[in-house]
Amino acid sequence: MYMFWKKKKDQDSNPHGVSLSDLARMLSTGTIKTSIEGNTLFAKDEHYTTKVEVLPPDADGGDGEPIRAVVRLTTELPGPFQTMMKGHELELSSLFNPMAALGALTFDGSKVYIGSRLTIFEREDAWSTLHLPLLMIATIGSAAGILGAMRRNFSGEPSRGGDSEWGEDEFELLQEVMSRICVCTTGGLGFTAEFGLEADAASAAAGDRNTALFQMYADQPHPELGGGLFVLLQLPHQLPGPRQVQELCEALNLLEMDAVDLPPHFGAWCPGRMGTNIAYVSFLPNALHAVPNIATNASIWGMHRAQWASEQLADMGYKP
Image 1 (cartoon, helix red, strand yellow):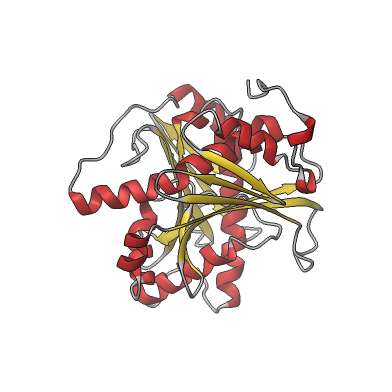
Image 2: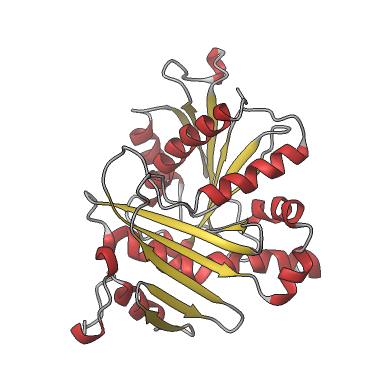
């Protein structure tokens, strides 16, 4: 499906085994202008430029399985948005990251950008079926999604509707797969799972407090991107207050950009819906529906992300 171009060897750019040339060829079929400089692809839209950078893993990336490369996507906010957020980065990031699609408003201490990350492991052979389409849609839609949602919020413009291409039968198949590793249910256009944060934790219904709540909905279109699959992961930890929630979300979004052994970061940490807890949101547009097993992958990424974040919280003294 994705291998429709004719490769030109003299134009190929393949840093750390990641074909930026493939990505450039796919992006060039639209209105985006691309250029490659070393290990970085620049994708220029009418309003902003997204940088797709291929990096080796950090030397202290941990003792997990070997990493081939880390692909980091960053889009600096246009001038008006930078001006609007200056001095209010934490508050406004927490306000708008719940509307994130495939990238998070991230503050590094000097500027705000929209960030995503893909860690590719040595054992993986999913470039054309998963990694390439995911990077392409994120390059096109991560900035457009959240900036468009922000614009609609300020202007009062109505949200974009649209039906999802995900259906009930797909959630039933997802439940069959995920029920082997967690407690989960499905009904209509939704899927719910509980991820244990400790070895003996299984379900809040059984009295366990060490579980994260994971949900998917195909009936909640994105304000800017329309129909697709809304993904929500909520941790049970209650923080002292809203300020601590804002600070922790920003810290986690920054950590997610590190070139280490972490699940793909195509979403955002933001305030949760259970009081002063934190959550991770993502939105998969309909354009990703054709990617095989993308909902299953997103569920497994959510499970590993919940366990990683719980460890980060424990190091800071927060328990469920």
